[in-house]
Length: 289
Image (cartoon, rainbow, N blue to C red; front, side, top):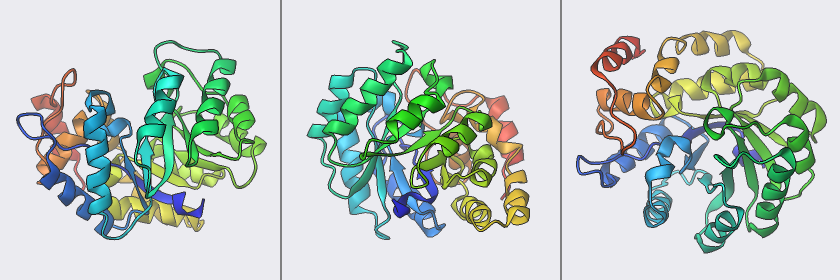
């Protein structure tokens, strides 16, 4: 799956003041990120506030992105949850034409065993018409999809990679060590993209690429070429800003920053709240351009 290498943008879902989806801003954001050189689009991931977007809205956003994807970039679509059968039904009922892969978050809240996680993903992969990318984000799900389970899952022909957001580089190394060279390790933490590439990762699905697509693409491509001097110079530009994007929840900080840049309105849906004034001040001071 060479199309899922480099920089993916985890697109936010812009809202209007009445909390409806702001398609005009979404179109501008697509143009901003694609003109900045990102390699593929990730729709309805964590950063899209997927938990508060209805199934109807998800389908409408996917359709809109397809229609406005003028550069014809690959599209990865998020479908996940903690009810395996519901995930399978959503996959079956979604229009996946033009979708290159599904990004499926590990089940949350019910905290299954590693065997439960294995069986969950095997069932999804067996029933999906497009490849599956595992998504491990323990900070949100409350449990870790460990390297041994990822290695077991990697032998399924319809499971092509993992977005790793555990923050554990040793775990990432174990995944690379124990999977086929064609299995994709994708960084899920923006500041760990360069280190993860250095140990065998193929790129990053990044929040920061909403804001700075050109800079993130330069950073990732430099690392993929083995030019870690350039990659680290770019990475160091974001060490102050990146933590602020998550300080009051994702995508609270990202949306505040994007609003400052004139790309979207600073609106999130409850239970998220817009960034506090103090956080907005910190973000404003940390913006690199």
